[in-house]
Length: 325
Image 1: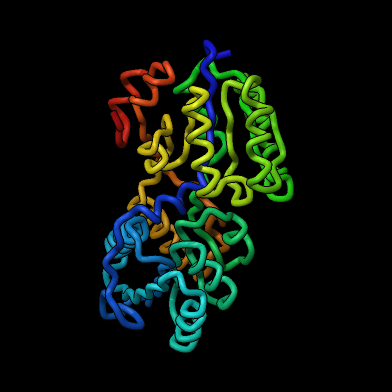
Image 2 (image 1 turned 90 degrees about the vertical axis):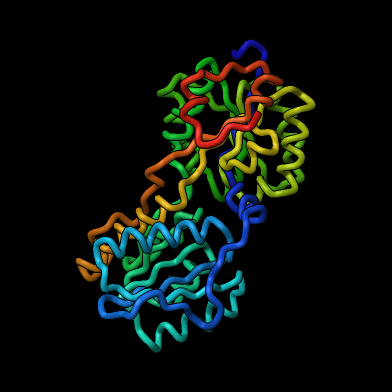
């Protein structure tokens, strides 16, 4: 056990929370914004929301794609979170045609997947892997970091952490929990799993695990972790002197100990590489259906670490993407 310090780990639903706090992106108005005359392949881009991460991912995609296919044409549609507009835009895309569709966010991806089956679709900024596995013409980069990556970072930052509690909805994440248990055992970590079917069951689950574990790991699950439960978790953390870990800098700024963050520009570039492969082969069959982010950024809150009496190695501090003091 960890010298009486216990840890809460919550791989994030925090992406949605981060979007609320990010600055608005600058997309052109109108039905679509063309960035180049399409003398090469016509790339249609569907953007779910006007927010910073989407803008960064789009710029990363364009930069990487144009470097290898300078004659490509881009037509960008901002959906503004509106499902009706998403369907309307997709109807236009179906009529006009496209060489490839690049989607950013769940709304754009789900709509494109539903409406198109004969055009390659490459998706980014999506947490639900099932959206990327449903059809052979769909591929993309998931926002969900691999379980191995998450466990390795926990072990690196908190090497004495031996017991971790897990909150999960069995209807959605049972298979993932079984995989996590096996991976944790290989790393000398024991998982204590508690079922949470709805947010109202979270306080009791926390009370059951509080005195048994060094860490509490929340698998991303909208029925367990919501903006409302986030407030409860942070209060629980500080009142009980239990560090909380999320998967975004927003969580860390609010008081979490550390998070694994995304490099949105690199995510866009990663999607562009998959798109180029899909176009070269004329389909996505030869491209891996789902890839995790290839780059991990670390955010740290040293004030929280001090409050929880947790010593963070200096090398990790120097290598962090952002540090809150």
